[in-house]
Length: 271
Image 1 (cartoon, rainbow, N blue to C red):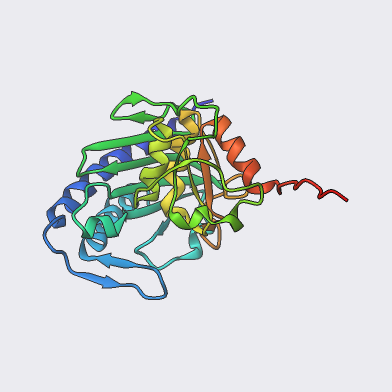
Image 2 (cartoon, one colour):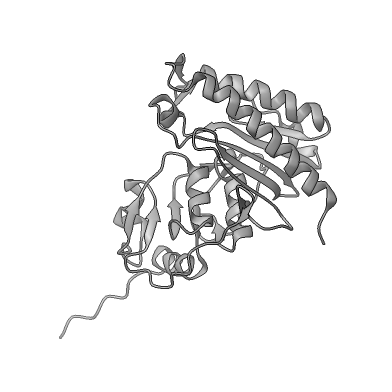
């Protein structure tokens, strides 16, 4: 049954995401101050921090009993004891943002008992908003979306970094697909949700804030969303990383998972 709080939470996330977009666009293409986080975590800009401050004020102010997990806030494990927790990436695709590209996104989600109950991915430079709650449809700008109906893996469109196509990731053989890429993981998930690409994959540990909102949107659209080995995704974990992500239309997800987990059977040589 629908939970009334989910719709209210989704409305809150939508409003906050749009305000975040206003903040981000003030810095976009304006050479924002940038730092490297170190330890391979990549860059952060003054825009990331400003958006994080805005979202913390808007969301935590409206739901003070919810926990908080954000890429740009030191982790407070008190979130593990809260019934619901915000999972936030103020700007997903920071490198794209710094480069002046338009595919950066705000990713906002709420988790309850390990599941995402509401999620929003907003691309302010494109004016594009994806949203869903756990009992409703996945929407892009208010219009329902669905994944592709493709059933043939050969030539399917896979959003993934080049490293994912290394043979050691595919015991069943590297799939013969067309590879594409977008810097924002959240956006990749939404592109699969609306059928513009057939699947996305990352086999590196994925931070929850990168995939939480997009995974719900893809699932509510009708795609299958799992970790990189096909296990169910769980959120608000003590270590907020998943074992990668594999998301696609049902037939393509099944085919990719088979290539991912089933070793090739080589023919025996003649005696």
